[in-house]
Structure formats: structure tokens, C-alpha cells
Amino acid sequence: MTSVSTAAARKPVRWGRVALHLGCLAALLVMLYPLAWLLATSLKPADEVIASLDLLPSHLEWSNYETAFDGVNDVSVWRLLSNSLLIAGGAVLGNVISCSLAAYAFARLRFRFRGPMFAFMIATIMLPHHAILIPQYIIFNKLGMVNTYWPLILPKFLATEAFFVFLIVQFMRGLPRELEEAARIDGCGPFRSFFQIVLPLTRPALITTAIFTFIWTWNDFFTQLIYLFDPDKFTLTLALRSFVDASSQSAFGPMFAMSVIALLPIVLFFLAFQRFLVEGMASSGLKG
Amino acid sequence: MTTTAIPTGEKRATAPTTKRRTKRERQGAAWVFLSPWVLGASVLTLLPMAVSLYLSFTDYNLFDPPHWVGLRNYTQMFTEDPRYWRSVTTTLMYVVIAVPLQLALALVVALALKSMKRGKAFYRSAFYAPSLLGASMSIALVWRAVFNDGGTVDNLFGTGGWVNRPGWALLAVALLTVWQFGAPMVIFLAGLQQIPAELYEAAAVDGAGTWRQFLSVTVPMLSPVLFFNLVLQTIQAFQVFTPAFAVSAGKGGPADSTLVYTMYLYDRGFVASHMGYASAMAWVLLLVIGVVTAVLFRTSRSWVFYASEGDR
Image 1 (cartoon, rainbow over the protein chains, first blue to last red):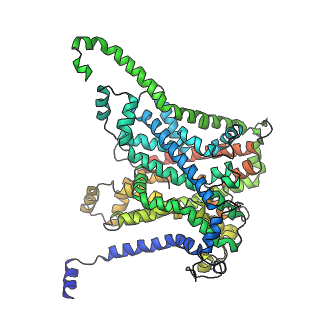
Image 2: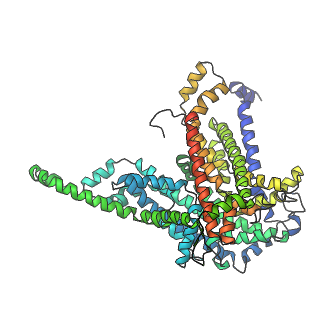
Image 3: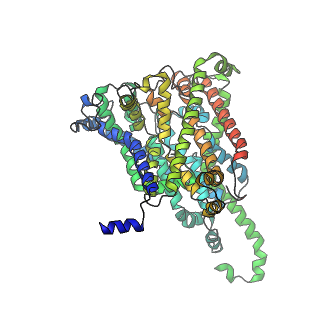
């Protein structure tokens, strides 16, 4: 008792701070509610999904997940999952390679029309996707690539996501030039200088690019909706969309079980890389 | 290493040619590094922009060759298509509701976290998480169920399902965007931490209270970041699609109350196969976003404060 009171006398409780933490925790609870709801509903028996007001199910209905694993339109979840992974993986590889190449040229090399080209690259960050969507669709249609994964992966190998080029340019500009100058005196050309000196140092920006590309591609809906028709080529996002049209409430459990499966990779990515994500976000102003 | 071995006389003689050669080499190297971007920017950005401008003056259904109709798509859009105007007002309402609410919440939370010693990193990550998860179809479906008849919001407030009521469905869509306030919050927080503590100390010495310090130090010092967030979120809000699609089961209902601009564009182009009309819509969107951005930049001169010329 006495020790507590002396401690309190020495360091008075700051009620402002306590209120701040309580406020933040309350806000967090409200914000996390949709996630808790999702998890709980994915484990609810069919008759409790809407009828019961309780967040927690009376018993855990694992069969929702069994049904979800059977998939949609006779396509198993494993197939949908690997389709999503293939597209996201291809996009990550494409963005990291093509954006870092372009960024090195813009950040370190001199060439004709550098200024106007850089300005154009920056301007495309603001360009609404819809202004180029239809002709892109026509091009891929003429190439016979509609209903394949090419329209989703190929553009990433051509540095079309200017945001990442800009992000990497900004990072490379911060690296000390002396390293490359010293290497040049030792007879190192731009290619070796890029691969052996600049690229290893750019790793934080490349990791940020990779993580955001993965999450955005995984979450993407519009492009997949336009380009993919065959149910066995569907991604998890598109399969979930099939539920949107005809979701009878009896299918609620399995539908949200599948939603959980679709969300899991992002949650794991977030938990593993949250430091990188938040810092990358703060330093570059990337969207969510 | 070898250069040092060469006597100075010889070095001086060879220097200009080597220099010119390496310069040409470097130019060539630059184009090699740049080639994927050049290809992408010309074939997948510049060319499509020109083509979509051309198509906007045609009737085109993807199968028959485009048929030139002059300004008819535009006149039809502006004078004969009530659904077009419906999509315009819906999008504007969405932008006006979602962007200020999202930014205000982001700023309030960033201010709360700023001076926090313990738990800041935790809260920062936790509030940021919805910004990544919220863009997914999974969460959009949760939103639809929670705001539906018999969903949580109905039970709490007895308002019925928002999703089925024309006046309320768009608000549900907007709230999904507001829920993702973590992204601008993180940027605000980074901006707040750049403000030198001496400014606050000086203001306090001059007798400024908390509110006065906020108005005279925080707001002007934070204005470039506020402006950045405002431009970014506004441009993105004009292009909203997935939440409106999911909340309205892909139909833009009830009574077209969630038919946002991009959804109507998708409907005209990819459902009804009026690619010319959709292209005209895309160009109007491009121009509107351009004009809004330009106006924001213009007005920014009067309220955005740059501490020094070297700053952003």
C-alpha cells in the first residue's frame, strides 16, 4: 500500500494520457468489429447467421470451411488460390525488375529527353486507369490474350506502375554517388554498377514495391473482372464475386469462410512486414 | 588501377576520346535500362490515350469497325442520358462525404498518436491495417451483410438495412472508405513528426495555449502534407468501384443510388458493348480529375505554407 502511494506521489497519474489510450482502444474495437464479425460468421451454423444477434456462434461450424474448400462452380479453392498466387507473383516479379531498371536510368543516367520523359512518367501517376482501359482491352483482345493471365502480368514487366518507378527513383537519389564514382574509376560500367552497387543498396525500396504490388494485385477486382471469364481461371476475388450475384443466406457461412481464406495471405503479409509497410507508406505517400 | 599507371602526357592525349566514348556508351546504356518503360509508356499508355480519344467520337461495339459519329456520344451523355447524370451526382456526393470525413479522422488520430510515448507503433499499425484489408472483396462483402436488413447496423440503430434504402446505401459505401483512414493517417503522423519542437516552445513562451499552437504552428506546418493527402484521396475517390459494386451486388442499386461513375462506365462499355460511349465517359473523367487537381493546386497557394524553398 505504502509503496504504491509513494510511487503515485512521485509520478502522478496523467489522466489525459489514460483517456487518450482508452479513446484509442475504443476506436480500435469499433474498427476491428468487421473483422471479428467475418471470423465469427465464417464459423456460424446456417440458422444463426442472421437470426442470432450474438457475435459468437453457439458452436463452431467447421463444415463451412469444408464447403468453401470445394470451391465455386466445381473449381476447388486450391485452384483459385494458385491462380491468385500466380498472378500476384508474376506482378511482383515484373514490377520489381522493370521499375528498378527505369528508376536507375531516371535517377543516375543522362540521356536525351530525360526531363520531358520524367515529367510524363510522373503525370501518369495521376492518370485515371479508365482513360486507357478500353484501348488496352482492344489491344489484348487483338492479341488473343483476353481470358488469359497476360493482360494482368505483362503490363507490370513494362513498368506501367509509375508510382513504383517514382518510389525507387526517390530512394536511389538518396544513395551516395561517391560509391558509383569510385567504381567507375575502377572501370565499372553502368550495368555492373547497377547490379553490384546500386541494386543491393536499394533493397528496402524493392521490398516495399514487392509487398505493395502483391497486396494490390491480390485485392484487385476490376481488371480481373474484365479480362477473365472461365471459372477455372478465376482468382479468389472473382470466385467471391460469384457469391455477390446470388447469395442466399444459407450460403452465408461458406461464403464468409472463403472470404477468410482470401484475406489470409494479406493478413500474413501484414503481420510479417507491417514495419516495412507502414514506414514505406509514410516515406512515399503510397495509397492503401 | 590502370589509369594511374599511364603517364600524364599520354593520359591527357587519350582523355577526350575516352570521355566521348563513355558518354555515348552511357547514353546507350540508359536506353537499355529504359526500354521496358519506353515500350510500356508508348504502347500501353500513350497509344491507348490517343485511341480512346478517337473512339470517343465513334460508335464501336468491339466487333464491327468503329463508325465516326462526331460529338454524338458527348451530346447524348450531357443531354439525353439521365443515368449518366445520376452517376455524376452519385460520385460527387460520394467524394464530398468520404474524402473530408476520412481526412478529418486521419488527422484527429494522428494528433492523438503524435505525443504518445508508449503504444504508438502498435496503434499506428493497427489503424493502418484496414487500409490494406478494406480494398478486398472479402471486406466489401462483410460491409454488405453488416449494413443489410437484419445486419448489425440495423439491429443497433433500427434504421433498417441501409443497403436497400436509396438515401443510405451510398453512405454505407462511403463509410467503407472512411474506415480505411489509416493510409492518410500514417502520412499525417510522419508530417507531424517533422515539425521542429522549438516552434512549439517559442509559441508557448509567447503565451500561446494548446488551441493557438494548433492553429498557428501545427496547421501551417502540416499544410503541405494535408494538401498532398487531399489531392491523392480526391483523385482516388473519383475512381471508386469495388465497394459500390459489392455493396449493390454489382447493380448500382437501389434505384441507381450507388451507381458511381466508373460503374456506369463499366456497364456501358463491357456490359452493353458501347465502347465509344464508355471512351467518351473516360475522357470526361480524365478532364474532370485534371481540372479538380488544377483547382486544388491553385487554391493551395493561399493556404499551403512552405517553410523553405528547398522543401517539397
